[in-house]
Image 1: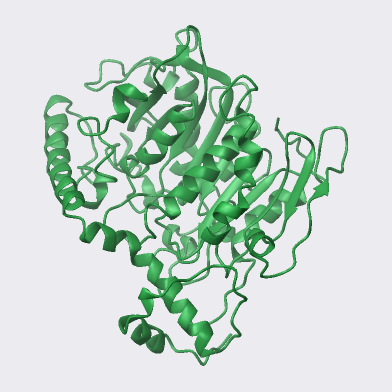
Image 2: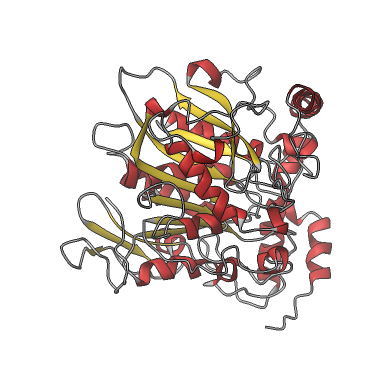
Length: 492
């Protein structure tokens, strides 16, 4: 659509102080094109600068960030000296310094989380092609005797996002009662840049966001009786490479969630549907998925605005495998993408729900949320990088992501089981965090059997447009929500 609203006008208005005005609430959409529409867009776009502005005006944050950056660079040098053989030198975030520190307040020497709420253990494991992957296992403290927890594998995005950018959510999961594996896929962070035969990772070989995710699941599920095979001949490697998951006795291997961002989200969308399982396990163990920007294939998640993932990755992450909806899945996205710029025309409101609609079409529970004023970096806490306030976008992500996993993975005697539906339906508290450009939608059954289908959650809550009411569950005895699928969905 060609627009009479020029981007130059929008930027001039922003520079003149339009960002100082609020945006959101239950007001009706202004007509397009109009000055009112353009002014609202200026205010919405200004949210992309909230996190950098807060950090730039907080001397304590800046000091902590710079100190952590220096400490991480020194720690990388120490690792290279003590553990020769790591081949992370080609990774932009190998040192975990500068923006690659992630949230600088989430480290053991300054964060009271460690030892009071959770514990973290460094691990290393090899992928199926021999590259060494760097990671951490996270577990709750205060455990009951013989207590076992569901597991979550958390996979980074591409463009050199390191695992440190996601430690904030690993902590949220531990607080909620999960064992978590965070790691850097090949070519990212502190993992090897290449396999022994020179095969790269990250954006140069984006299939690692599928294959390494499978490897991470296999490693998490390994035990003394069934060790992790890719490590078998490499236990003398100078690094914490172990034959099996060292906290295997705390993991309930019958319950697993996947969380991924960007390329990791697309990888999770693929991995949840793999059948047969292309790793060491007898069957696909995944019970639920949260995909941050976004659920679906590369083509489905490409926002078609500026540089999309198709251009960035050069094609599909798994060209020989379609995305097959199998387990309950939540997608999350945002108004803007990698290089945020003001909108000068109305976007298609259905752009962000393409993956969601695939899940709904085959009767598998699904949810899609779009962060108002957000960017592709709402889920990776990277200092100075465009995003809404970490108390806005990240808060929404944590609330709904944990609730979704609790809905499908927790058991009745565990915290979060009985409150999951209420948290997923807390529209009065969260609807104004949702985009007014793109639809946020859901279609899933509550534990009491009520079907919650809303095609536009924000509009239904704030009264901006009419929206379908909740419907009773319809379908066969298996609780299917409609549609037909050749695959058997896995859900509880």
